[in-house]
Each structure stands twice: as structure tokens, then as C-alpha cells.
Amino acid sequence: MNGPTKRFGGQLAGLLAPVPPLESPPQDLDAAHRKYERPADAGNSDAMYALGILYAQWTEPPNLDAARRWWERGAEAGNSNAMTGLGVLHAESVEPPDLDAARRWWERGAEAGNSNAMTGLGVLYATLTQPPDLDAARHWYQRAADAGNGEAMNALGVLHSLRMEPPDLDAARRWYERAVDTGNISAMNNLGVLYAELMQPPDLDAARHCYERAAEAGSSSACINLGVLYAELMQPPDLDAARHWYERAADTGNSDAMYSLGRLYQQWIEPRDLDTARHWYERGGEAGNSNAMTGLGMLYAESTEPRDLDAARHWYQRAADAGNSSAMHNLGLLFATLLEPPDLDAARYWYERAIDAGNSGAMYNLGVLYEQLMQPPDLDAARRWYQRAADSGNSNAMRNLAIVRGKLLRMRWRRGVSRMTKRRH
Image 1 (cartoon, one colour):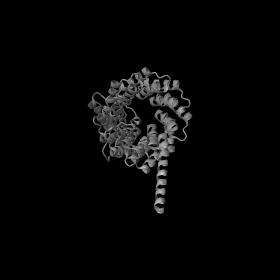
Image 2: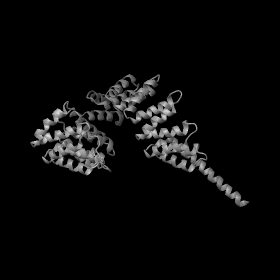
Image 3: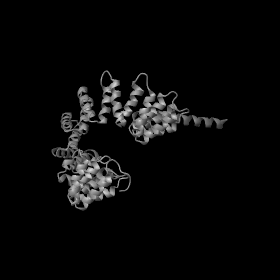
Image 4: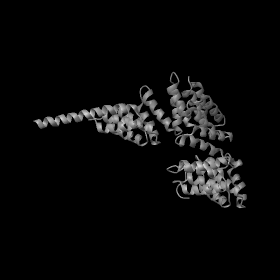
């Protein structure tokens, strides 16, 4: 297998058929290996597949070469679960991914009737290939759904609600409901999102019902969505209920919930509890959540007395290094407007990095830097950045763009008058 391996078991791990005794890490791995090696050596392809699961999912660190060898043996013996596992391995666990190999193995599994392999092909065409081929994705998801695959039904709901133009929310709801009937927890949560955020007008009671079902089935994402519903969507908000659901998600290790708790204590609860907010941001940040790192930077930069700009910069930097465009933007603001003296070169660098990451607010503030902070101003550069920000819908940029255009016209008029005066003399 070419390329370094990555951790096995990401977004595609749900395509792997369970081996009932191996649904959690075996207490005695050596005994589990012995249990399956004898029948595998005797030609049992199900045992070969189970050994691949042992090596890929439950061995620390994973031994993906051994998993691949056993799955290849199982595949050659006709085991479609092993074919599906090989597709997952090639799509997700080598660097760079080998999508051609993944497609070949999933196609073999699909030809053998494996609905997880069909779903894998749908994922490949919908999210892994560039540009996506949504017609091909729908074809494979449809085939898998017709075979009763709940993950494929859920994927069809996502396709119709979030990927297709225009969305077909009625079709999405039907597919989510079919997936829910198979016990698919993600579909319960996604159906709640559809009711709360996509339908007009929203149906918050239906959304809450769906989120609660998913939360009771173990979905930490649904717990977070319940927190958002109670804190931000319901009128009046129920912040105690929001805190309850965020804490349930945080107790499972969900770093997004830790970030949400930080925001709740910093921005929503009266009076603000900055110590508790900092606690949750720190927990989320130490768990690798770049939004929590950014929130902690904002707390140090804007909410503590006195401000701790060194701490703010530290956390913004960590979040920016993780790719967070808001943190890059905030570093630009820190260097441009909070430090004494300002460091406009550093501010410009971070604004440009944020823009490269898709942050439109940084376009506006880079325009401000060129128009209002640089000496002398560079109004042509300011106009370009205000224009880009305005094109993305930024109303402040639209206003400033009109002001800068007026300044440029007056400058050109004055230059013209000056040239005419010189010619008269």
C-alpha cells in the first residue's frame, strides 16, 4: 500500500459491517486473534474479514497492512464486506488517498450486492471526488436505500436538502423519515435540523422531538442542537435547558459542546461568568477545537480587565495554525487596532491569510487598513478590498466603498485642476 497511513475509522468507518463479538474493543486481543486465525487459515472468509477489523479498528496502533492482507484474502474468497473494507482503507487511510482503488473495490462489493459498498460509491461521488458527481451519487445511494440501507437513506436526505440546487425539502424529509424507521441516529438529528433551520417557517416542536430521540440514542450532536434550540431559537430562551444539553454533550468529550458552553457563560447568561467561560474554552481548546481557542482569545482580548493581549495572541495563533479563519482575522485586528504601536505589516499578513481561507470580514478590514490606518492611505487598494467585501454582501464595505470612490474622484479632479493651472502659467 503506497503512502503513509492515517488513523483508521473516520467518516467512512460506518460502512464496515459489524462483527457482533467485536463491536467494542476485545479485552483480550491475543485471544480474539487466535479465535479467528484458525478458521481464516481454513478458508473462512468471514473470519478473514473479522481479522481485518481487529487489525484496523482495535489494535493500538492500527496495523493497516495486516488489515489489508486479510481483507484481500477475504475479497478473493468472495467476501463483499472485505471488499467494502478495502474501499474504506484506500479512500481514507492512505496519504494520498487512492480513490481509483477505492472505487474498484466498492464496485466489486456492489456487484456482489453489498449495500454498504453502494453507499461508499455514493460518498465517493458526492464528497470525495472533485468536482462532485451528484447524479452518480444519487444513483448509488438510491440502490443502497432500495436494499434497505439506512445510511444511504440518510445520505439521500442530505443530498436533497443541502447539496441539490434547488433543495427538495419534501424529498429530504421522506428519506430522513425512512432512515429513522431503520433506527439511523444521524437521520433523527438531521430531520431535526431540517425542521429547525431549513423549513420556513421552522417547526421547533418537531425539531425538539427529533433531537431528543437522537440524544437519547446517544448522539452528542443532537445534544448540542438541543442546546442551540433552547438558547438561540426559542423565544424566550431557556438557558438552563441549553446548559443541560451542552453539558451532556461535553460529558461525552464533545469539544463543540465545550465551546458552546464557553459562549453561553460569556455571552448569554446574565451576569456573565467569565471564569466558567474560560474553563470551558480551555477544555475545548485543549481538545483541539479551534473555535474554542478563538473564543478564549476573544475573551482575553475583549472581556478581561485588564486585557491580556499576549494570551489572546497565543490562543488566536493556535487556532490560526489549525486553519481557523476567524482567528486569522482576529489576529489582524489585534495587530492593527489593539497593540501599541500597531503592526500594520503583521495585520495585513493575517488579513490576507484569513481572506485566502474565505473570510469576507477580513476583506473589509483590509480595506480599512489601506484607507484609514496606513500613512499615506492607499485608496486604490482600499477600493479593491471594499469591492470584494461588498460583493460578498458586507453592508459596511458597501458604505465605505461609496466613500472611497468619492475620495478618489475628488483626488482626480484636484489633479486635473492642478495640471490645468500649471499649463496656464
